[in-house]
Image (cartoon, rainbow, N blue to C red; front, side, top):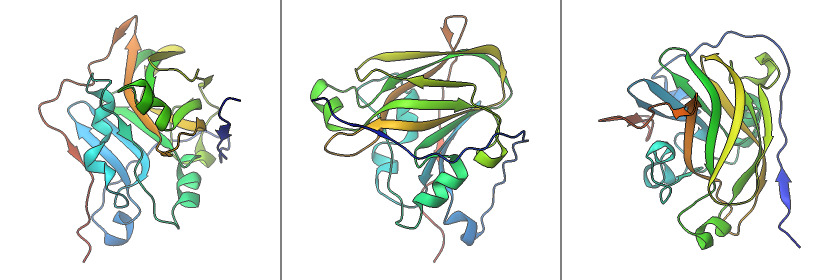
Length: 217
């Protein structure tokens, strides 16, 4: 019998919104901050709690765009009180947002689902099997309907999801179903945005910065 697919509860309401990004050094806000990676031309944020878990440095977000399937972004931990807040903010405990510095034409998303280092590692970790793609706000109550929903086959290698060809100011990938491995770690080895068959240059950085640690005493 194949492993059971776990469909995740989502909290999504269809409305129009304008996305607003605020950066603060306030201790109260920072404690609930999303994990993000910043490098020239792009920001990638996830629903991970920035200050919970130790995997932010071992399996960071940037592993998704380094061109190496032997590395992976592994979703890092949350405090026990956080999952419901994460769902209310993102629509799922597991989600990520990709934002270019200015809107770009995109017609598909390619994702190397799970940890593609080898077959054993792939099966041992969690894999995404369902997701919904949005443009706009992280807050589900302020979102339009999804641009696309997709089911991914449970296999290694690339999965391509076509999108309406237009300029996007951001893309939010909300994970709505996962297949569990014994390690219960949600992993993504590679992620690409594509326009007319060519991937956009998301991995051409000389340096990048991530949110990690806390300056709260």
